[in-house]
Amino acid sequence: MFKIRSWQVGIGTVAMVLSMIVVFQLRTESQIGQNLPTRRVNELAEIFKKQALQIKKYEREIQDLRKQLNDYDRDREIIRLKMAAGLLPLTGKGIRITLGDSTKKLTQYDDPVFYIVHYDQLELVINELWAAGAEAVAVNGYRVSNTTGISCAGTTILIDTKRLAPPYIIEVIGDPVNLHHALMMPGGLVENQIKSFNLTFEIQPMDEVSIPAYKGGISFQYAKPVEEETK
Image 1 (tube, one colour):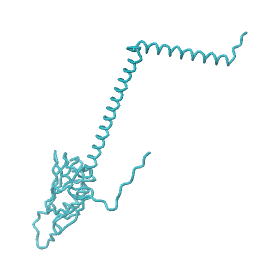
Image 2 (tube, rainbow, N blue to C red; image 1 turned 180 degrees about the vertical axis):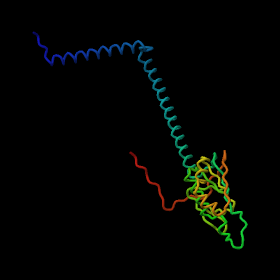
Image 3 (spheres, rainbow, N blue to C red; image 1 turned 135 degrees about the horizontal axis):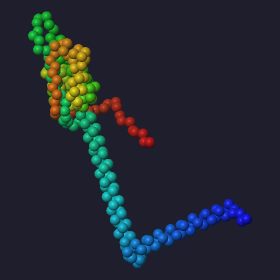
């Protein structure tokens, strides 16, 4: 009996694969030759040249589109950062709050200091609004940012360097329901810090609130950016 050795099987397999490659190559060349509009070298070179120019044109168009997309993403990011910093005027649904001094008729035994709005009460209301998801806040038409300072100056309140007098109209962009619930919850800020002093406090839901851009200065004396790590 004729015994087939393993090396013979290997040679046969290699030969079969090579034969298939040769047949495939011949068929491919035959198809290319049939599809070519001409067999003249000069004409083929001209065709390839035109196609190469067309490919370069497409590559330039792709690069331009990618640049436009990158510019668009960068512009959107810049707008988003300006919105977060309060540098752009904004509009949207929200609430309007009127916070004012007490309307109680005082007697000679009442201390007026307990019946006026103090800066820390206004600050507490604003902080409560931020915690409830407010996206933009303005007081008497002055935009409040994350660097805004609130202090007192006699019987008036300073927001940054702008002097404000009551009533304080607080305009807020955000979910009106969430903002209202956060302020008016039983035992919350308004009940304990505002109404207990007989201060006037009203909330009005608004379909559209317009808030101006922040007009104060923005400076960083100690903070500096950290370079992002590239992976």
